[in-house]
Image 1 (spheres, rainbow, N blue to C red):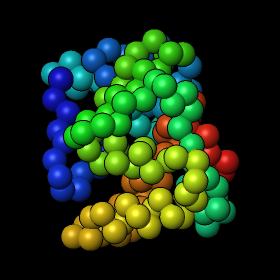
Image 2: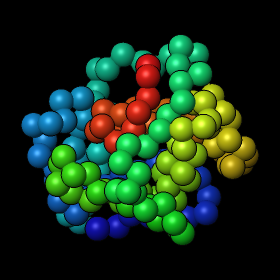
Image 3: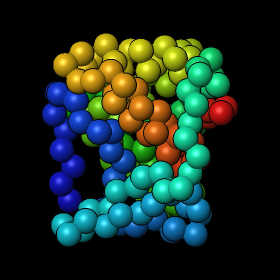
Length: 144
């Protein structure tokens, strides 16, 4: 499996070596790559997220002991799906901001500041989609 992780901006990615039990993932697309990798994304046809409605929500990672967010990579062990998920550098950085102290708005602003060379709207939109994915997987508390 190849999961890139550079110091520049790239779409936040959550990937695994084996597909999770998809019966628990009604709102999540599971995509298998030709190299055997498995990526997850928000399912198509979902209503758009209006960030202004949840800007004051305070995202917090669930089961903090199941997360490793050190260095260039991140890993979370999803006990319900019985699989570890690997995060690229951007996803790791985003998750490390979900400490239960910052609002969603503050987190999105911080992510945009980390990557000033990349369009702000894209960074904030992809970060929001990624956090919703974590919420759908029950890895994150986020009221929306």
